[in-house]
Image (cartoon, rainbow, N blue to C red; front, top):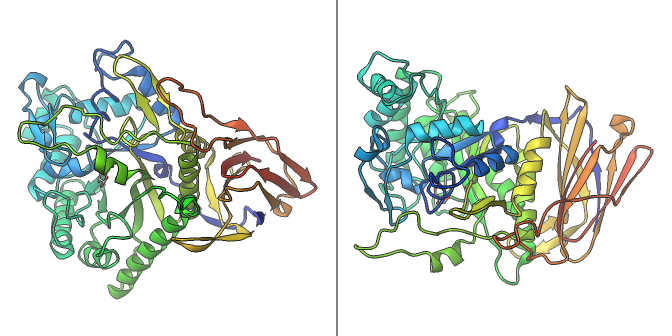
Length: 501
Ligand code: AHR
């Protein structure tokens, strides 16, 4: 396929918020236990956190980390996870049919986040709890001292408040699978009351209302409308969640998953702005795309079902998807979609971080390694600095079963005024042939390529595993040339690439 792209730093979509490169740690499977936390591991620090995992988290360039769930949070009592470890209760986690020992809780997570250099983003239980618990955990976390709850935090070892700014008002409350699932009307009222209470305590918090669990939910659109009618003045963000998986015989649609993400974001922005218009409110609600990834849910559903009153495993191996080259190209494409909407998507979380549908995998007592999806995320997080640019893309198209005709080549670009550098992110959705992309750099008066990398492989199913941890990685992209103000790039079939100018 062929595409022509015009890039001009004068045309900005918006500033890129670093929180676009967030991730997610849930008490689920081996994400926390045997993931970030393994006190017996040879690299464990004094708090029991694996230093090899911390190194990879830093390398990944993650900005925020959402915690402690996910579906888990709707049955969670935050107080279970504070105080002396040997006095913490053992609970049944109904979301994942597992045993929660509470060995890791708020203090441990705050310490881990500090060590990882990430900002914690807390999710509240609005499935089975309400306003008082939300206000309590906020007081415990953010009030310096002088009240019973803040003094308890100090007594439990944290003299300085945690200073948590971002809070999710529940999780996926539109989903019938959610513990405490309710109607948009009921959730909207609860979220509004909770938000008002929290702001009475700490006006500086930034709050995220639950949007839809995906665009295919039967209530999609009307859910956002109703929830925002109740919460417009109270919240800063509405959430989007989306997971993509390939279906046999339809590689074209899978590679075009970014089209679904584009439509999802644009629909939610329209609904939010529509509510603003109805309410005669000029405020703009931002999007927190706080769960997104490739996830082979159909496969997991068959494989990972734990059942039985006497069967509640601890940290079971569930949702441990092994990602291949195709999955990484899709993840790269999804990051392009997020960047393209940087004016309204001001936060996002790759779900999740370690072992559970994750870019980082570990073995207990063994290694930690990078999945294929690690690479597009890390490169985008590192290079996408400054503003996202509005590109003109004229691409050949092809047909897909799910999304109709789509561009064969998709792209995003960023420009950092401070350094004068621009980065280009490209995905070749053509899985049969290489593509040629001509980039018009007239606005720059020409440019030079500082470096360029590509992710592709003769075997699109190639993956990194415990046995072969470095099978897939980035390779230097050399198939480009500059003719005056034109950059011509040849991309292999089914590939993701980035160039910094
Ligand atoms: O990330 C895995 C799960 O996906 C989360 O717990 C839930 O919020 C979503 O359905």
